Length: 242
Image (tube, rainbow, N blue to C red; front, side):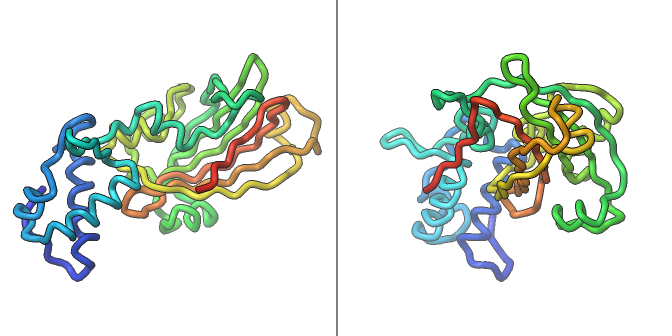
């Protein structure tokens, strides 16, 4: 997609959306060099400063990377660096904690009031729900409940009833032509109850770390709401400040 920008938003915002869609559509693929600032300015009829502002934002969002003397490249959303963004579990040494994830259940139905509010949807719209259990070194450490808009990831709904271990937000986003942006996470302490206690193998009432996270697309649409209950033992959850 290329050409003139027409709506009333600031030009650099319109441009970053247009360029991001070219990445999402596969017009520009991971590792590929994109046109330079002057060529983009000519293509879209904009100043080099406007183009630079849009590219600055895209670099901050980790959609592109600039390499001095080489050019500007589309980043790989499935790369190790990209997946580190949402993998915050660490060993005592600080190394990334390697976990084995098992899908317990997957289903699709109209969103509950809470799901609709967290995913900015109408209650009659459908969500695909998943339950996952993650283990490390043979011990269950995290039980997750995940909800995503079905229209955003229709291929997930096709697996309803399956017990597949392969759900990964960044992978499915890439396969669906969706670009993942930022998220926010609330961290609290809660008590293990019901199926959470059962799946984690702890006594009801055991204190757990509770993670409440919403991830948005690059266009700020909620793409995933996830609740996770963690019994980390000697491991920890790393929050990086910047």
